[in-house]
Image 1 (tube, rainbow, N blue to C red):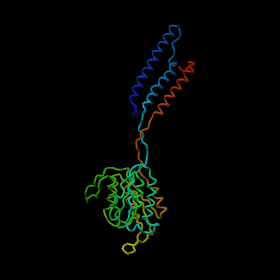
Image 2: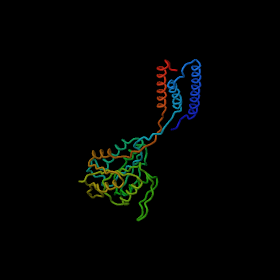
Image 3: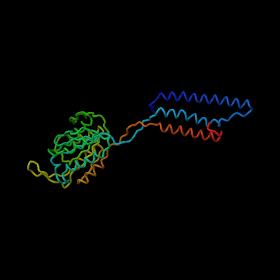
Image 4: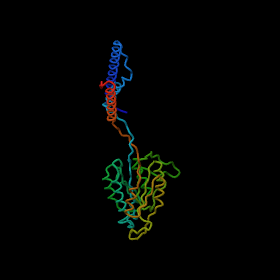
Length: 317
């Protein structure tokens, strides 16, 4: 417990000590006078009303010192990196109006639903990955970055995870060399990566190794499958290419990190899937002022003391 005005504590001690000493002196004089007059000495129970009133004094003065205590308050907080697959396959129309457009719409709703305590960043990945919005509490900036996303190129989910980890840790992250030790990224349990992808990997760093790096750093990856098992077609360089949702890789990545795969077969289901994404519930210590409880306790002591005084002596003091 801390006090906003700690000097008042010293005043409370001095005044309380003076009040108690004064009452003890007065009580002794009254008892001596009664004995001299031939009356019986007062019982200890007759002192109870005055003891309660005296006890209210330090409690009230401590309340004036503005006591504060830190209380652990549960809240959704931390960092969320939204990773968008912008490969050519994301322009397929099996999810209307397209996989990428549906993912953008769902992601914007997800961002708008987050409290101010969640910082949101945006990255896009094709054959390479690029952070387009660093994690920020300005959710309007994150939404603007989502709206700028457009499809092109191949897919490297492994690269996306490494870039996302770099944005979370504040330093470049590379996959471990073969038979080499994994880099120490620290521990970031309040960070989450949310991947929007159709799961069609075309190359790049090993996805499983990248996911294991995230797991070791305490970063959970939630994956959202965009597309349908039936699939659709896209035109690339004049050729019609078939593309379908591959849930296997997305499920494996989520499971490695303790996250969850969210299936979404159409725009409505995709929007609903983002609403079920589980973010970290953390606790944060917040100062709580205790002046009111101390004032209430002092008032209660004064009331009890006054009522007992009236009942036993016919007066409060």
